[in-house]
Length: 318
Image 1 (tube, rainbow, N blue to C red):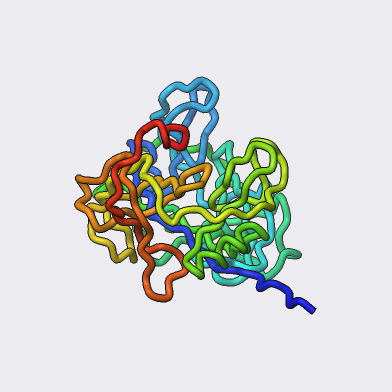
Image 2: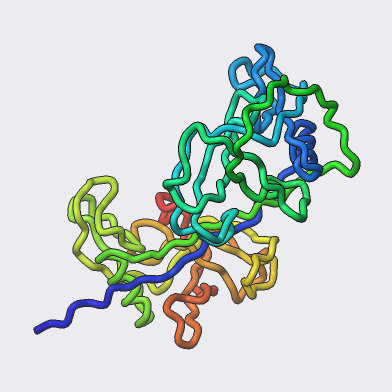
């Protein structure tokens, strides 16, 4: 009896810091949060938008008429979050809510601290719970909490948006955690890599060899089951020079990252080029893989000493 193949799984994290500068409207909004002040912006037809935007979503006119709204509001819709993730506003179960603050015409998305979903309802009154330490970010609102008070009977107040030491830029970390499980084709590909072999799959219709294999040809729409070993040598088709050092990556910059068409493959894959000065890498360069001890994939590719490939041999793989 043949043993079932190993099911491969790997936890993956994709994260990067997103840095952006702020215009006058967003700067005033975030600086206001630091000062426990919620600002919106008034459109040409009199609507108050919170969070504020720099241009009218209906007319595209530039907006700059800032107003202050209250820290209390009404839940317009909600969804319960039973398992908070890392970096979310609360570490215990909470509700995601859209809250229309008193004086605003649009709703703000944030967290509501509630003991359970039975305590949350559309139309409930809530108020802002401010963070103890505020820096000029949306997280200065720690969350919303239930509030019994009636809506404030006063219009939004005009505000000049001037604060001492205004916030002019933010860094927002973006992160995605997920578990990847390859299918039949990529499982075979990964097992072959562990033996320092590169195996693709050929489409029975167009004969294109996919590396890494996808299990089906996206052009013909048919399954690919005919396995083909390619390489190990290949040709640099295009490349870029990387000048920014990545976090947790022990590679000195500058270095070259390239598309490499392995011999026999129908498309190029990605790989780092080493063993040659970065300014000597070129299209058509013939390369071979370099495997680290115990590595499951090539650490990088280096020149193999063969003459450069003629452009016509790889022009269809750019």
